[in-house]
Length: 381
Image (cartoon, rainbow, N blue to C red; front, side, top):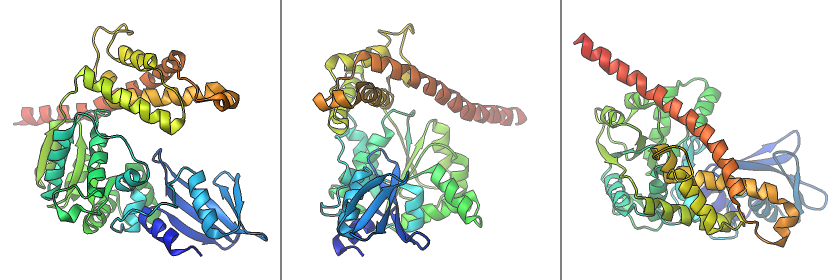
């Protein structure tokens, strides 16, 4: 139905599934990777005068004379990659692992990101450890830049700048706990631990790098293979020590960034958001967010790690851009890129502070039971 170029693109995306619905005679394309890390889809149906496509809400995307043109324009309309470009040269990925993981290498190939700031030594250490078939336990709070290092590793693997030839054309696949739970529910036969072990095995056998997010360290330690090449995020040194009992672990604690480095990251993210969302972010807006994080505009006497981590500030800035676009309206956007004001930032800060409080409580709930268990063990001895 599609030409070889588009079929190669569909194979490279990995997560895309195309199935024919016999009742509606529609080709359902699901799992298109997008810039915002969500997977989109659409339906493609043959009509009297060509091919018509609709999104998941039933809204018409367009009518096209050929199926290839319908595929290219529909993928672009839902926020996916440009299929007219040459497809990236990547190793294949098994469907089971593709449905449960985020493909950071494909994301770096389709949606170029800015370079990682002030993390060169950490990126080099992670690349060397992964090339030596070790599991890297990267310790850092949420928003401290763990994902930025992983994306930089994916970019270097894509460009062939890694030490080990085995990593060339490989993918950096991050496990998604929600997708893993959903796939385990659909299969029914396998438990969560067995499904986790199967996905890790699929990633390893394909010659890819597994990225394991925070949480479920004890469950991971039970099913972890003796030699797994990958990166896992952890919040405390105890999680890294637990994983070191079953496999070769290289523990890397992310160093804290200076205020000047955090401001440089925030400014770099602002310039990338201007291109991505077609907005204007004045220097005053960047300074406003940074001053609020460092306590200059807050009643708190000193900043906490949940206020000044670069990921948190970039999230606030992205929320402010979204809110500013909604406040501007279509007429203002036609006149030019709308400027993101301090009012949009202030409303986004109020929304983000509530979510950070929930994050803090969830972290405390996961840390306190471990502390109590260790204390009880010491008393028992």
